[in-house]
Image 1 (cartoon, rainbow, N blue to C red):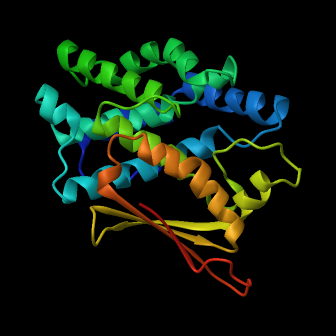
Image 2: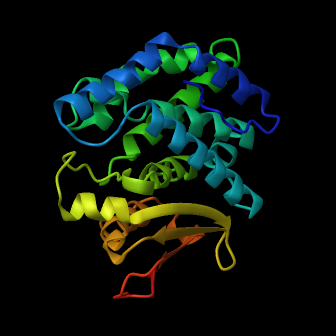
Length: 257
């Protein structure tokens, strides 16, 4: 499965993505993660489709923030550049859920067991040892910090955390629910029809969510709000959700402050 990322001239990212796309080990970890999540636990997708979606989302968020003057943490703290930040975010996205092959519970920490060797292989020959070591640490921080109760300490990790929550269109909720059941989890998941990432008017990034009915607010209030508020970069985002269609509306518009 190709990530189909917009590279925008980032040669280091292009090289890393080529290695990701050709990695049998990583693609196997993704598919095996879905065996655990979907086949054994009967919950929603945590495999290759999820990875491709959130990696594209994360890269778009990073670039929208950068266009508004937000400096990435690897630039501020390590003297690297924004192209290196894109590599960090990409690697963290593709590796954040691989711990599912071991267990769903505490999968974030389990991902940290499997990720280092993959990171080192993807960076070998592209970066000198010092820079590769810095990037590895930043990637592992972002993988760990995508857990709901962990506060990211870098902009890149905050981006990954938010991107993970935004894979919610048309039933792709990040709140796990049992497939085939009717519950507030499944109904609210199906209510989210479109998530748009736009340059903000008040803040750098506007997240606009289109819902078919008001049940979708459950997804926004029980996951996106929490992950956004615990991202460390919430001040850069505005969220607006609107109900479209003929539903007798309980609310016209929902915002996260």
